[in-house]
Image (cartoon, rainbow, N blue to C red; front, side, top):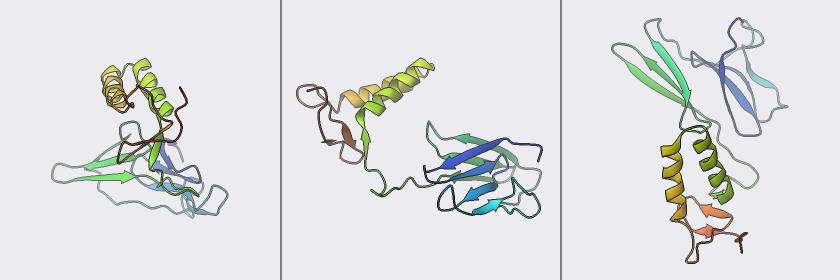
Length: 156
């Protein structure tokens, strides 16, 4: 295989490699040490893959969605358009996360600022400062849906 330009999707338990043409060429399920489901990356004839057949008139564009692990693959032609979003649900023994660590959000803001994404950093920062309590403190967790502060207040 001459082209090793792949996007990766995963959930900390397993991962899949998605080619620039949108095919899943390597994937083990349910864990990293499980048997391979698709292994075209290792053996193009016998390895198997999951893919969409499209003609050469399609332009295929692939990128990650806004600082997430959701890989978007767009198939475009003069007459047709299709968007394929690839992600592996992040679930662990505690289920799908319903809150975020507040400090991680502030680290994200700092990282965005450092790489020059100042508008996005400011937007997230302004949203975050609106979630402080009546004395300006932040809890360690923030509920995704209700924006309620959860857990301890480490600054106290």
